[in-house]
Image 1 (cartoon, one colour):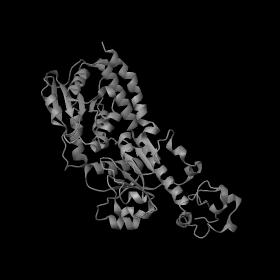
Image 2 (cartoon, helix red, strand yellow):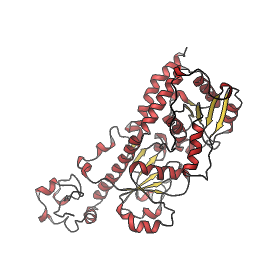
Image 3 (tube, helix red, strand yellow):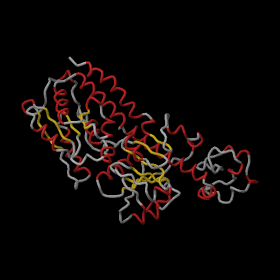
Image 4 (cartoon, one colour):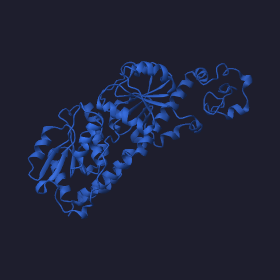
Length: 414
């Protein structure tokens, strides 16, 4: 029979997924949390403007940069331009001016950052150091930053907008149907009924020794080649996850620094969950702790072995935790949810940039950029009808959406 403490963990856990995604857990606007839909902060007229045009800019050839700046744009129909590509200069000269928002992955690409009128967002996934001591941060060229977790954000946010967007599911694997608990007998699916446990990624030796020496565990390691890319790298992971009874996402040997504990992304936890593999993870990483069920989170190898055996024995509270784990992660990492997360950020960053440019006295420049040069000061051309118009995209005639100031209007169209 499940213990009282174990039973109590389930109702508490049902709140963990909701808490993870609350606006105040995901957003900081001028350093403060928000408690409602972030786009509700925008002036209602802003919703009728054109949507910002976005380009992702990978800054190196590392897999982590590819994941966030090659895979993620597919969710949002954004474009991709490699910062280090030999073709960058010609691409930039011909295309960069047509984009409103640039997302720099891991590091800032100075080639595109020279355009101060654009919105620049730095995706800080897998980039652990706070970098606000010099340009471009100290001259406000960066509008927003993306982080792994609330802890990561609160300790490293340096810009007017900061948001948590969890690492997306980045494997082209088909989740296998896993039978319900009542359809299978207790035990594992490995040789002689052993529990097939897979270690995800590189891990510390202690967890390897603990599981390898357990007589009821058949241990597998994820095949991973840093030099491989695309389908060849992902196909090996698909075969690996397809064999597992339980996945373990643990820390690597270098995981003892504050920056890494706060900044490591959670895809090693969420990838097996998205493939319907019950997953036990390390509680020292802030992002792992945020996305996984408390009952499936451990701080030491002995705890991991207890959870693995408990899952094999079909302990009710752990099976309920797995169901909650999978429902939460599948929803939050769905293409629909991830697309919304990115769209909200692009919208907020673009509108905030526009407002700040106007407040800084830049609205004549904005008018010039949208075909209204020379009109902002011509009050004779302003009419009451002008005050009701605001949309640049639809031929509107106001420099700042929603303003009723007569000097905000002109009779120009484009």
